[in-house]
Length: 452
Image (cartoon, rainbow, N blue to C red; front, side, top):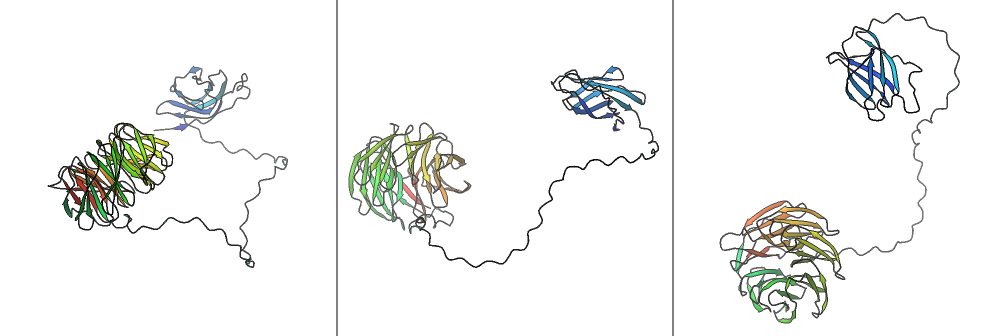
């Protein structure tokens, strides 16, 4: 495509300015002879946004496009020569100049050099030059006297506990063995007390199992009809009974039932170091119970049908199963700090030291929430119908009720590492716990407990 720039623009003094509004100024033109279009560049060509007028050789040209700085117009075929072009801007100011159409002739001979003009006035002083390179470093001075010792810093975090769950799970899980759940009814929740596994059945019984080999050490009575969840306070096992409306306290060392407290709709449990938090399923409240004597410290609002509960060292988190939210409460006074929308049927909660993980039973995912501010970090796919959830110090594990499996996710990024099918003889996995070396899962539909 031939593209030849116009050869001459003759500025016509006295034809530019009309009125006080900005006058157009043309800086350059170019004629594309293959498309018969002329491109005009400048400023103030369309200051109001309306189309300018381009007159070439006494004929108005049709515009292809225009802006305040560029105008493109169709130009009819002309005989080679120089023609007058007038651009009238959208505010009726104009700029006239000559445009050469056709090939440019040969350059004429150079004229004689004119006389040297007088020397002009001195210009303004130029800017200072760049700073030169730094000189060599001088010798070091004598060391000063040692300053006074500063105050002691704050005490660091405690080292890992011998029963900490963070350091022992390095191998891939496998279903090593299953044990019968002798506690009455279908096994529901289970918990590790540092030495033993405790399993609660649906019918008023607690089973104590030695973690090393699964041996049943005792079966003890637990108050209530439909026992749902467990929590350990460092010395005692607490059991929530939904249908019985009770919260029972059993001494872990010998299984003695120490006391029973009336808590209507008791369901989810968590321990904050001094108090037991128990959801009142069906009443949109959670009760704070002093662990030392069972005194009720307060009742605080949450969402609909609170299920799982977790404590992160500062705040208490509740999965509100029926309104698809998670409540964040300050543990010191029960104030609601945030209500976070999540997927349908949030069920159980675990804390990994930084973030909160929630099983979303109806969406086959777990949701990760930043504990500091309640921001949802992500949703990660697990098995069908996730219910129980636990953290092993490195990974998140979920018990998947709908497909008889256990999912393992890497906590730092939510990657699904593996899914373990529990196989024949197991059904409806419910609760899940970690003992520092192995993951334990209740099979509520089959009446047994698996050690992975």
